[in-house]
Image (cartoon, rainbow, N blue to C red):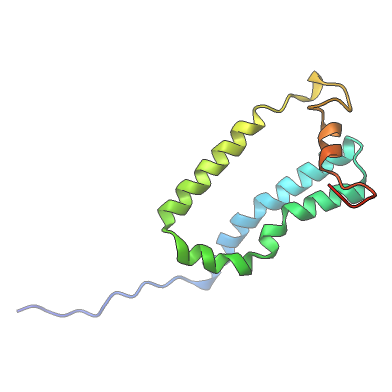
Length: 126
């Protein structure tokens, strides 16, 4: 005789989503502060620095639009592998950036030069 048990229901406390979101958003704030501070110290105007930081947080601003697509398109494993691959590629590109003392200000590779390339000029173009 087989005993039928109730189906096991797994649930998650809503408070756990708070910690998941904090772990996701924390690096954005830390990177934003570090990048903003470095750009301002390198002489990039505050308004242009703010524009760069704002553009870097745009993905989190419109998360409510793209999150359902992410949840319904690929498996977790596929997203994890794609994200890990992209992160490794970005970290590999960071290895190509010279250290602070290798170039003088305004030369390719210096922080000031990078800020000038990324900043928005008076004409409003990149």
